[in-house]
Length: 322
Image (cartoon, rainbow, N blue to C red; front, side, top):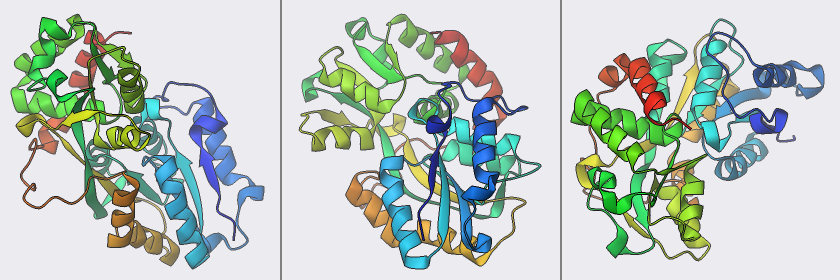
């Protein structure tokens, strides 16, 4: 049984996510792919549509093994790094009245919580597992700031790299910091950080690449991107900073309004299994298990973060203009 994979980026080159109230050409292209008769498996009841925010390089092999073992075709829609999680979340919201996806595999918690709050995902059928970590990275330990607050010091002017904070894990981290510090202090920090003229990248992997090219001194990124660079021989120092650090679990959830078929449940259970978690750890997509770190990092009050989501995003867009 063939393993089918579709990529949003492969279907259209537009770099912006579509708006919540309408479908863009990219979304339409994916809709056509998923509904074209030639794309249907011989046994439609054995096919599962998955929207996947986990990196394609990690997820594809896992999904291919699942298909080989079960005979269940997985139609996977992946997002681009530049709009990671936000593009798929917006797509799910836009499709809420006529859902086309069975399962959402997220790589951080905010967008999953957003989709749960809007009834797009089933509150009785979702789980979080494993985690990555938001981290500071530098070419040597002596170049690492002692905290995220220190990134606003003049020492780092023009020497910082971070992913554009309207998308992905960087956005999630910034929004949780807003709740942690309070809105006024957070806005002042964002303004001071922007005044330090950081490089705003398309994604977290570009943060590490710019650091490797010695174009910056310090980066704000995810632990899995640092591990990937280390596997390629890069010598990088990494620091996860106490109460300012955010842990980013993977999530898996069933989409509301879809038929709860055995094939869907089988993939849903498989993705949150210990075997998949250990495989993602071995691949470097998740952090290794570390006893005694359960209380480490920011405490995320998701209801409060979501309540101020639109206003906080508007502030970020105003402050970090490109």
